[in-house]
Each structure stands twice: as C-alpha cells, then as structure tokens.
Length: 108
Image 1: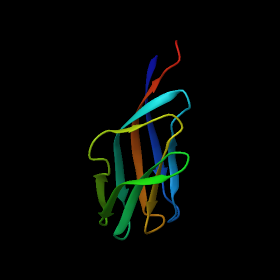
Image 2: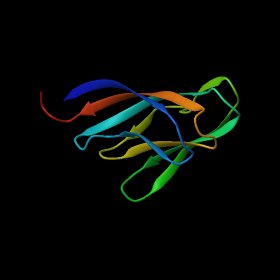
Image 3: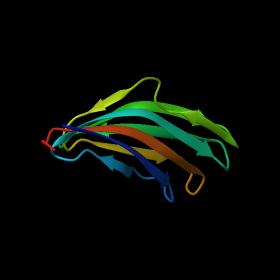
Image 4: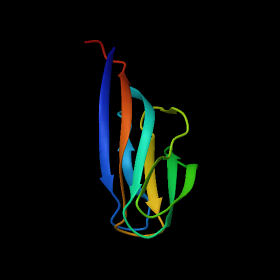
C-alpha cells in the first residue's frame, strides 16, 4: 500500500462541468483542499462529486472578484473511479489547485 500526495491544477475556460480529478481504479483518495481563485467578475462556483451514474453537488460558493477560498470545508473521501468536477457561472476567471492524498491498495 502506498500513499501518494498530488496536486491537480485547473483553469476553467467554460461554464460547463469541468472534470478535475478521477480516482484510479485501485485507489481511494482524500481530497484535503480545493483552493479556488476568482480573477474576474463575481461568479458562482459549484463542486460536484460523481460516481458512474449520478452527480452530487458537494459545494456551492459565490466567489467575489480577486478572492481565493477553499471550497472544501473538510476532507472529502472519493472511492475507486469516482470523479470531481468544477463549474463556474463565468468562463475564464476561475482557477485553482486540488490537494489529494491517494491511498493505493497495490503491494509495493
């Protein structure tokens, strides 16, 4: 079993759901922070966790101009093959970093 620390950086170029992270099929993941920055007009940002069938909203925040916030108010556990997506009401203004601890079940 291995612990792997990762950062996934993103910049949203559209207002649709943007896939930020997919948990590997042999891994569980603990998402610690989702630091999100707005460099443009005020906009609403939505974070969704997705299994293979359904999308679940995990956070919704209005982020004002030139502000950074952590969208996750506590650790988020994602299981094998689940995904995390982010969408914003305004394109080309939201960017950020997702900090993750992956716990891989393979023997090293």
